[in-house]
Amino acid sequence: MKDKSKNAAKTRREKENGEFYELAKLLPLPSAITSQLDKASIIRLTTSYLRMRAVFPDGLGDAWGQASRGSHLDNMAKELGSHLLQVKTLDGFVFVVAPDGKIMYISETASVHLGLSQVELTGNSIFEYIHPADHDEMTAVLSAQKAPHCHLSQEYEIERSFFLRMKCVLAKRNAGLTCGGFKVIHCSGYLKLRQYMRDLPLYDAWYQIVGLVAVGNSLPPSGITEIKLHSNMFMFRASLDLKLIFLDSRVAELTGYEPQDLIEKTLYHHVHGCDVFQLRSAHHLLLVKGQVTTKYYRLLSKRGGWVWVQSYATIVHNSRSSRPHCIVSINYVLTDVEYQELPLSQEQNAAVRSGLSYKRSLASPPPPHHKHLKTRTLKVKTRVKPAPYPTVGLCSSSTSLN
Image (tube, rainbow, N blue to C red):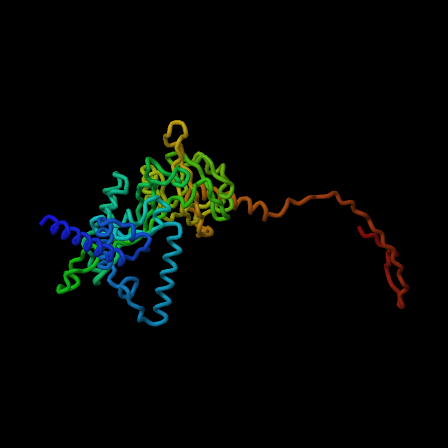
C-alpha cells in the first residue's frame, strides 16, 4: 500500500513538473532562462504575462500572436513608433506597473541601471525596490481622481513624470551616482484608465486604473564629470540655495552674461517669473533625492528676452564628511534668444540703456576741428580796352579783390 502511494505521489509530481515545464516554454522569454526557473517564478511570471494581456489586449496594435492586418501605412506607423520607443529607451528601460504596485513587465535593460534582472523584478511589488520615503509618491502616481467629463471616451491616459530612488546592486564603479544603495531614476510615461461600466452614458461612466506605462532613465546618463559639453551647453556650480559660485565661459555666448556678472547671485533672480515655481519644485526634489532633471524653463538673457533651458543637476557631497557640499548642473540651451526687445528685469534694463548710450556715442558726428587758415589777397590786373565810343569819368585801370 505504501509503495502504491509513493508511486502515485511520484507520478503526480512528475506530471506537475511536466506541466510547469510546458507552461514555462509558453512564456515570452529565452529558453535559456525558462529552463532555469523554479515553480514559484513560473507562476509569478505567468500571472504577470496574463495581466499584461489584460492591460494591452491588442498588444502593440494587433491581437497577441496574430499577424498584422492593417494597411501598409498603418504598419509603417507602428514600426516607426516601435523604433522611436527603442531610441528613447537606449539609455533607459521600460516598465509597466499594475494599480497595486506589481511589476507586470520590465525590460532586461533594467539590469544595466540597477543590477536587478528582468526575471527577479517581474511579478514583484515595485515598493520592494524603491526608497521608503518615495512610497507615498509612488502611491500618488498610481492613483487618479475621477475622470473629467471632457474626456468622454472608453479609455484615456494621464501623463506622469516623477523621480524614484530605486535599489541598485551594481558595483560602485558601474553604479554611477548612488546614495545608501539607491539610485535616482527619472520616470516618464502615462497612467492608463479604462471605462468598466459600459451600459452607462459616458458622462456617468466609471473608470478603473489599468496600469502605469513608463520609461526609466538614470540621472545623468553618465558621470556628471564625464559629460562632454557641446556648443549649446554650459555648466555651473552653486551652493545649496542655488547661489552661483562658478560658470564656464560658454554662458557668455549663449546668454550674453559674462560669468562674473552672475557669480554670487541666485539662479532664481535670472529666471522668468512664470517659471520660478517649477524651478523651486525641482530645487526641492534635488535637495531631497540628490539628482533632478528640470522641466523646460526660461533663463533671461543679458539684453532682453530669454532662452529656453533644461538642467541636469546633482548634489556633490564632501569626500571627508559625506555631507552635501554644492550643486553641479549641466544646462542645455535649446533655443536662440527670444523676444530680445523685451526687458524683464532691472539688469536687462540697465544693459539696454548702456547699449543705447554706446550706440549713440558711435552714431554722433565728431566735434569740428578748426584749423587756422591763412588768407591771401589776390590782386587781379585787368586791361581795359578802349571803347569804340567816348566815355566819361573812367576812374582806374586796375581792381583789387580781397
